[in-house]
Image (cartoon, rainbow, N blue to C red; front, side):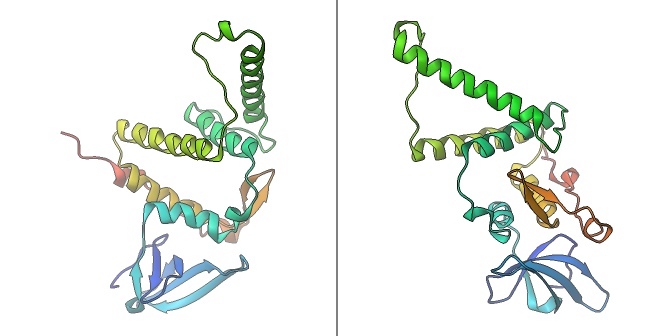
Amino acid sequence: MDYVEIGQVVKLKNSSQLMTVEAHDLDGIAYCVYFDDKCNIKRLEIDMDLLEDATNALKELERFQTDRLLHKNTFDLRIATMNILEELLEAHGVGDNKERDCADIMYEELERIVAQTIWFKNNRPEEMDGITYSEPTIEEQIDAFCDIQVFAGGEVGKLGYSNEQCLIEVGKEINSRTGEIVNGKFEKFKTEEAMSKWYKANFAQCKLNVE
């Protein structure tokens, strides 16, 4: 490669190891970071000629999970739901606190609705008015989470932006940050050194050319 950008995802030619560019110099050297198989941060100085672009929207998001070994965590529906609820709050301008009080309130209300639906199914099915309930299978839960992604991508498009390009930008941003899992959520390290390496998603370059 003749040129790399800070935050760009690259890999060595003939290698599958993904890395993020932290910096580069005028001599053609890229300073890259990646996580090893024990989730330790590793840094390399590599000649740009030995690198190739590896940016892919889905791979970028998956890498956030795999690099930090989050994909090995046991599935927890409460945490998964609260993660999504917290992002919906942000879309409405509300930032939750570290204790996730707002998302917790919303989840409790959701649980109340589920419990009430089950009660009506068992006691007054004639009053369900088209509402149904059945214990969800793993496949049905997967379908629900995938549908959420489909709808979210559609809304990004309605706002006038390329969903794929936005996901790439988000991937660059989250993968530039180091941290730890607290209360089921990834908490960023906010030391001066860690923050100096943060990449900020540039959504301006993701706008669609709509006539």
